[in-house]
Amino acid sequence: MPILSVEALDARHGLLQAVRGVSFSVAEGETFALVGANGAGKTTLLRAIAGAHRASAGYVRFDGTDITALPAHTRVPLGIALVPEGRKLFAGMTTEDNLRVAERRDRPGPWTVERVLEVFPQLVPKLKARAGDLSGGQQQATAIGRALMTNPRLLLLDEVSLGLSPVAVEQLYTSLRALMRGGTTVVLVEQDLNRALAVADRVVCMLEGRVVLERAAKETSREEVLAAYFGLGAA
Amino acid sequence: MILLNQLLQGVFLGGYYALIACSLSFMFGVMRIVNLAHGSIVVLAAFLLFVLADRFEISPWLALVAVVPVMAGLGLLLQRFVLDRSLRGGLLVPLLATFGLAIVLDNALFESFGADTRSLSPYIGDLSYNSWSITEDITVGQLDVLILAVAILLLGGLQVLLSRTRIGRAIRATAEDPGTVGLIGIDARAVYGMATAIAMGMAAIAGAFLAMRATFDPYSGGAQLIFAFEAVVIGGFGSLWGTLAGGIVLGVAQNIGAAIDPSGFFIAGHVTFLTVLVGRVAAGGDLFRFFIRRRRA
Image (tube, rainbow over all chains, first blue to last red; front, side):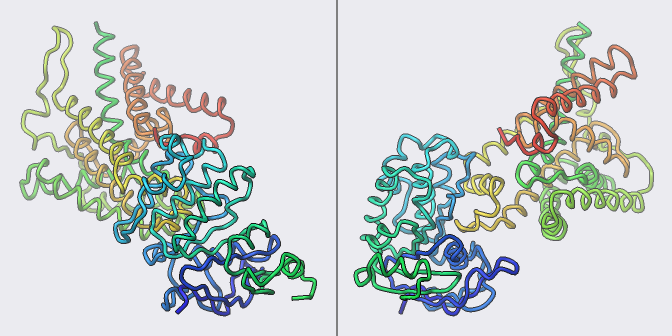
C-alpha cells in the first residue's frame, strides 16, 4: 500500500484552478520529486497534501485513510510535515525554540534537538540566536529541523534551495541525502532539474496544474523532462 | 519629602494600573486584539466576588479560587463565539465587537445591580486601611504593597510561562504566525482560546483588587480601561515588563500632577500618555506600525 495517494485532486485560489485532477502515489521510503515551471501548481499541491490548502475536489489518502477534510494541525500527528516555501520560521524566537515548539508528546520518535543538530551541525553555534538573524541556509536548516521534530513519516519539502548560495545548497542536500537513505519518505519540489533527477527515485512534472510526465528518475533524461516542463508535446 | 512620598505612592498606584493592564497587554501581544471590553470584564469579576461575599459570606480571597476559573471559562467562550469570528473580519472588527460587548456587559450589570457603588473593602478586615510607617512622613498601605507584589508576580509568571513552557512556546509561535503553526501540529484557535482564558483569569484578579482598594459600580469599566490602555501604550504594546513600567510612569505622573494642583491628577496622566503616543508615532512613522512593531520583551 502506498503511504500517500492523491486521487483526482483539484485545488483553487478563488477562480484560478491551480491543481487540476492530479493523481499519483508515493511508496514508503521513496523520494519523489515534483518539478515544473513557476505557477504549475506544485506549491498548492504540497499545501493541499499538508492540509494548509483546502482541496476543492478529489482525495488525499495517507496510509490508506482519507484525510482530505482534515485541517493541517490534525495531519501532523499522523506523520505529515511540510517545510513551507519561504521557510516561515518564527523569526522573533530563538533557533532552539523554533525546534522545540514542534516537539509533540502524541508522536514520539527518534527526532530530538540533539539529533537535528547532528544532521545540521551549522545550527550548533546559532541555537540561542533569533531565527530571523540567521543566514538563509541556516534558516532553511532550521525549517527542515522544525519539520523533523514532529517525527514525520512523510516529509514535504517546498523549494528548500530557493535563495541559498551554492555552498549552502550543497550542505543542505548532503544532510537531506542522509535522511532519505534513512528511510524517510520525501516529496520535494525542486527548481534545479539536475538535482531533482539526482536525488529522486521518481519524478513528476506538472504543467498548468496537470501531471504531464511521471517517470522513474533513472529512466528519464533531462531533455525529456524539459520538454514536458515547457509543454513541448513530446511527453 | 512630600515629593518622595508622591513618587512612592505613584509607584504603588502604577502597580495597580499594571495589574489591570496585563491582560490587555497579553491579549494584544498574542492575538493583536485590543479588547475594549476589558474594563467591563474586570468590573464583572468584581461584581461576582461582591455577590459571593455579600450574599454568601465567602471571603474574597476564597471566592477568587472559584471566580478565576469561572472567568477563564468565560474567556474560552468569548474567544470561540466573539473574538474568533470577528478576527476573520480583519483587525477593526474585534474592536467593534469588544466595544459592543462592553456596552452589553455594563448595562446588564446595571440592570442586575442598579447604580449603587460597591466595595469589597468591608470584607477584607483591616487590610483595607492598615499601613506601614517608613519614616515620620511616609507610610505605605499594606494593600498597595500587596497589589504591586501581585502585579509583579503575575507579569513574572506570564514571562516564565511564555519563555520556559511548551504552552508558552506555542503561544509565542502562534502570535508570530498563526498561519504556519498548523504545519507543526498546533491549533491556532485552541491557543487563542487558552490565551483569552489566561487573560480573563488575570482580569478576575485585577477585579478583586479594584474592588478592595476602592469602590465600583456597573459603569466603572470605562475608567479602568482608559488607565489600563494608557499604561500599555506608555510601556509599549504587547511588552509585559513594559506594561509594568508604563503603569508606574502613569501612576507617578498622576501623583506628581496631583501634588502640583488637585486637578492635576488626570491632566498629568493623560498628558504623559499623549506625549509618549505622539513621540512614538513621530519616531516610528505611522500609527499602525507603532501598534504592530513592539513585541513582548
